[in-house]
Image (cartoon, rainbow, N blue to C red; front, side, top):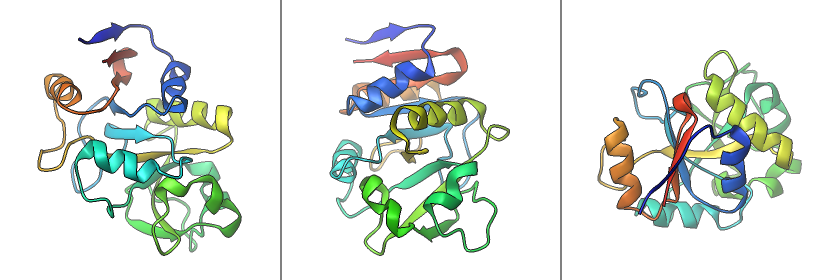
Length: 186
């Protein structure tokens, strides 16, 4: 049975993340290309040591598969060796995690101490930025785990109907429809 909640705040979504619930964000137009950039993304708390295993199990994919970090652009240099880059909005680089930050984001660090990052700015993706900012306010970690909103073998979610279908046939807990501030959860 699904429960629909309206007038959901970013804080409401982050509370679910802090309760170790796996959710997705669905908003705007779908991204094109090989990356989910916050419009069709599964999101999770990157601080959990077993977070990678939890999300890989829910996605029904191999345990070794890594995840990306969506980080507030203005904090990226504090957390990653940006190799001279100002930003990385399209998740095209694996960057070394700064040594003093590794212990805070184990769910998104690859075996070589790198992370594929997406920098998020308010101008590029307002809802996703605000969600990550709320997570930062509550945890002091300015990023979330991000992976494409799909299950192994399925195409990335496109429509609202596809999002609901993916929620119901998976072990995910909720989908946040950011454009209308609504959560559908089990």
